[in-house]
Length: 334
Image (cartoon, rainbow, N blue to C red; front, side, top):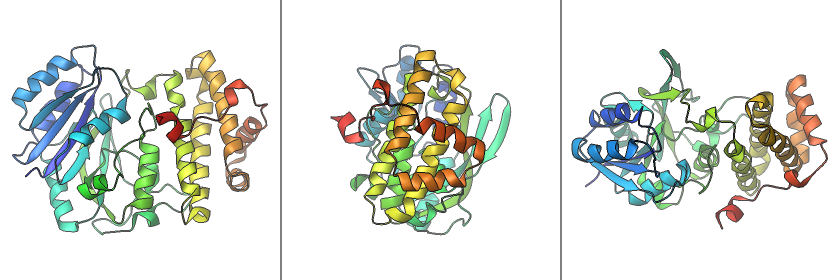
């Protein structure tokens, strides 16, 4: 029986993949499988993964015929997974030895739907600890209760899929797959759905994931049109939260977070190509108009004046061809 399936997408990470694969070998167990998803890499990554199937116990290589993006690559791995528990790792990050075994022990003991863990941020030679914003540790909690309050950093603001472990019953309920085609911010609707619909979770103080920042091929470092997928991702969050039984309580958090993301991208707009920057402004203006306006007004009123002024100005922009509503998640997947 497979106890744990780990989904690891790779795309053009030949510089970093050796560290990732070495750390998987240091986490191997006879009842673990590692699903290495090659998202049609064009560098030396495929050869590294081919060798890993011989050198890393439990490694299984799955190839995409064309590049599909991180969300779809993760879904491919989930579809092939056989484990009682599931976890994720990105192809340019790495693990401490025995990290997954420690999380499996915690899952066995707590018997919750999912775990959240802390992680180490690695920028060049610098290291810093990023903690999951859940104060009560090693205790089974209700995920829905961890979404609020709206004006503080909460569990849904820590969206990293690889910072945790998940029971297979979530996969069986359709809660672990990602929205196909999202090229960035794919974790955002995913983490919101998990917290709205799962029954139980826990946070544990386990430091074993090393998250590499500043990778030149990462979409967070590239100012092209793919970055704008955050709008479609958060449109999905709003669309689904509006339908929730607790929409009145949860929407202020969703809208405030959406506004914060728009503000973040607008504040660093110079890193985008000129045509993309123009589209970012137009799409952001349209997104602000689509939000529930009463909730948006309250959110803007609670923000610092400088950021709120920028968002109010954006909302007043004239709607043009680039301001048309982004397709819904359902429409985009069709």
